[in-house]
Structure formats: structure tokens, C-alpha cells
Image: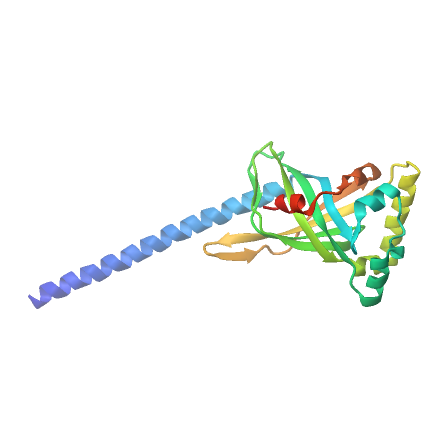
Length: 230
């Protein structure tokens, strides 16, 4: 009788171990499939086309940037908030930048939470984090709002890059088709089971913008701009 109970107990242990191994293998397979799917989506995202749609309620040290562009006033150093910011090392830039992403590939493109940076002529201007998941079906276009909230003192203190931007704006006043280089850098977050891992490095998207694109700056009520992020 004791042998019978022992045999039954051993069978239960074996069954439990087999069940645990099976569940582990299934979970591993699902995780591997999930990572592979995310990798394909990121690869497709690298091949997408990116366009700046609008820059809403962009404020530089409390001044509406759309009004600066409309008035062709380009000497930002004369703004009271900027002048004070040079003194204390803090020149805030805030707003909502909306980007259109078009997926020309046969695969679904997508990304979960991600960090991003925006550089002008190779100098970083803005960095931030987007909590929004993005999914773009083949042949489709989606618009993605990014919240801007940064200190641009380092950028405005870089005289070489700032002079390039100022020259770009000055020539724009005369109707010439000047261009400037922008770089969007994205660091995706990859879901691995219940954990989130940062992508090793950034995906860089280079974009040349001509003067005609400066009409993307517009003023919108802050409540309207904020609702775009929800």
C-alpha cells in the first residue's frame, strides 16, 4: 500500500513538472513571437516617410513663436524672457509638434513607448518621451502629436548652429528657397513579457525642410493642443 501511495505521489510530481515545463515553453514561444513581431514593426518604421504637419502653441520663453514667424522677427535674443534666460541658463520651449508618418511597406509599422530627440543642423534642440503606442497599417498614414517641453539654452548658446538658423530665416524673408536639416532620433521601448526594455541605440530619421514649411507654426488654445495628446 505504501508503494502504491509512493508511486502515485511520484506520478503527481512528474505531472506537475511536465505541466510547468509546458507552460514555460508556451510562454517562451509567445514572448519570442511578440519580440519578433515588434522587431518587424520597428524595421518597417525605419522605412516610413515623415512629414511635419504643424507646430501648435509653441512658446519660447513665454513668447508665441507663430507671431515671431509671422512678423519676421528673428532676433530672439532681444525678447525679455530669452535675455533673462541667457543670464540664468534656462530658456524654456514648449508646444505640440505633430508629425505625419506614412508606411510604404507591406508590413505593419509600429512602436510602443519611446524616447525622442530632435536636432537642427546636428545640434540637439528637443528631447522627450511619448507614452502613446503607434501602429501604422501598410499604405496608411497616421498623425502623431509630440509634446515639446525643454530648455533650449544650450542650443541658443551654440553660435555656429544658431547663425545657420538665423541665416536660413533671413534668406527666407527674401523669398529664397532655403533649406535646413532636421534629425528625428527615436529610442523605442520593447515589451518582453511584463518588462519593458529600451532599444539599444536610436533610430535616426534625417529630414531636409525648406522655408515653405515654416507655415506649420500656428497658435491654438492650450486646451485644444492638449486634447490632441489624449
